[in-house]
Structure formats: C-alpha cells, structure tokens
Image (cartoon, rainbow, N blue to C red; front, side, top):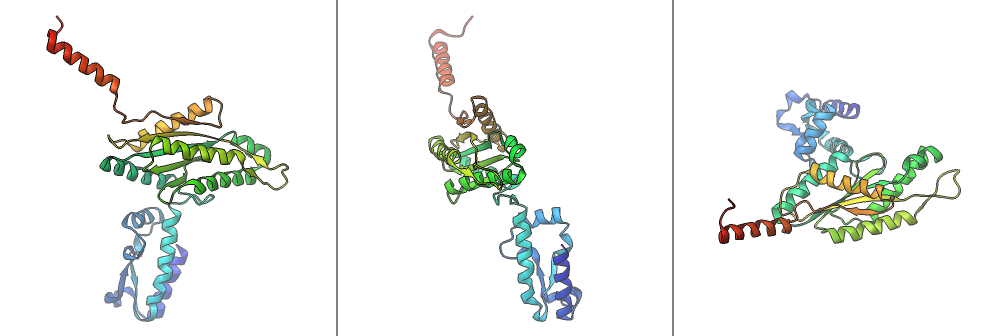
Length: 271
C-alpha cells in the first residue's frame, strides 16, 4: 500500500494537477487489463483499497499507470497463491472447484478431485527441521505440477495437504494420474542441508468423481475425498482410495422400486 501511495503522489506531482482538476483524465483502476471485478473486490476488502478507485492520468503521468497496474496484478495474484509452493491456495481452490462442479453439472461431464497428504510429515519436521520440511513440500508440489494438465488445478490447501482438480477426468483416468504421482513421490529423494542420506517420503490420497448428473456442493465433494484420504491412512498409508461416486444412479434401489410397482399392478396394495 505504501508503494501505491507513493505512486499516486508522484502522478499528481508530475502532472502538476490534482484529481479534482483533471476530471477528463481519470482512470478507474478496476478497468485495468487483467484485473477482474472479483479480484478487485477481493483486494478492496482485504487491502482497504477502496480509496484508490480513481487515479490521475494527466500529461506525462499516463505511463506510470503501468507500474500501478503491475502492482495491482501482483496483489491480486498474492490473494490466490500459496507463498511457499506457488500453487493455488485454499481460497482459489474452493472457487475453482465450485466453478468446475457447476460446469460439470451444466454439461453432464465428469470432474474429479484428489486430496493428498504427506505421510508422517510431522516426523520429518521434528527430525530434520522445518527448512527440510519445506523442501519436502516443494517436492510434492513439483510432482503435482509435473503430472497436471494445463486446465487442471494443483493447490496447497493445508499444512501438508494438497489438492488436484481434474476437469473432464472420470474416476479411471484420475486414478491413473494419482497412481503416477504417488509412485513419483515414492521414488523421489529430497536433499536437505546436513542430512545424509536424502529424505524419502510417501503420500496418501483420496479421490472422488462426479459424473455431472446431479448438483454436488464443494463441501460434499471435499468431504468425500477427505474420507477416502482418511481411509487410505487407516489402511497403512502410501496408497490411493476411491470414494463412492456421489451422483451415480442407484440401480439396486431402482430395481426394488420397479419390483414394488409391478407387485402393486398385478396384486394390488398390501392389506
């Protein structure tokens, strides 16, 4: 915010005007390229940014707006990014997942979600220190980035908990991707200062898929993936567990209903 304030003062000084004296030269910050309305409102809420809606753009001050735009874009990016790994943070993850769930329901297409958690990560921190723990987290982030497609989202949603949103992927495709990721993590060795040999870790994961046949909330979807993750931990860690598909048509129930309807038609109601 201090940088924005300094730039504002510099703009006014260079233009030799004040915002009130050059009404034809005002630029509205939310119109800057690359800044959506949602991003602007998020910055305004969290950064007390409302007073910077209008900026003077008189005379030779116009080029300096590029610096302001870059600053705004950096702030918007920071609200969506995990500072350690560079992956999406939990807020961006939840927003993206809601968008993909809505899209899946509108189009009747699948979307899968995997939640991954490093096994015994606390022991890594306790034994080797937090800098080594950070390198392990970066290693997992690298594995996710190496296997995700351009339209997938990898996110860090907790301390050692990560998520992967896979639009258009059914359960079989998601399972294949996740098994490759777990195998890579299993094989990776993380070099840490003063630690010999390099640190090896494993990861557990839970995956869930919707077919887009019925609306599914973010909370429900995450809860199903979480439960599958906990089951993977319970079964011994270093594995993937699949959650039930939330909108899969229950054929056993349909068969029962159909049988009851036939009984009513042929024999009448029970007395």
